[in-house]
Image 1 (cartoon, one colour):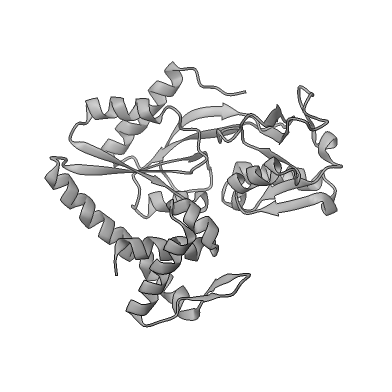
Image 2: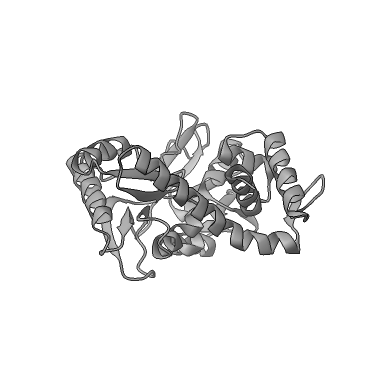
Length: 295
């Protein structure tokens, strides 16, 4: 059993989709399939039920998934400590963020942090937003970049961005020429709602606001904001999202959405972790120096 097999297993267990797992791991689908078959052969158990249309965990796979995450974490930590020893770093700083996070300033932050803490190596992790807060409080990550959240435990929060939500649509859509859009403007168009938002109070309130102000039969569901962007690009509907994701591209319009609440996005850490606090302070200073208040 090796790290590659565990990464493939855990990613496929989370996504239950070979194509999405391959995309997240920058591998081909046949490579994922081979790693899973090797792992099943080694443990002597069938971990997934596969058909031409679906993938699901077997009872053994569900049980194995619980421990596989800890096994992978311990294996990576052991390798990281060995790598640090070989490269004269005394510790790691584990940093998590989502793939759609607004972190264009991260190279500048890392450069400044390297000058201030040359003995610490910052390890970057792309994390599922549904799990990002638990990663912090379980001690698996030292810093997480995520929306503000008044419902989680005691910790330090460094505000980085403040913005209102925006509506995304194809640039040739008949609403794309408006300076702002309202819930009333959207009520006759298919509109995507994000499942993953339930863990974030500000997004939960936003999507609840949309649900009560929209035709029920025109509400569509997607598992994440990056997936919503794919649907909108393909013309399946519109969406209202935090415009922090950096996902916008040339063929999409992003129009400010009239809504009474602003969104905050920042860095979270525990106060006793001094290196994490230092990293968050550097990040906030750089962002404030660049005047990054969006929309």
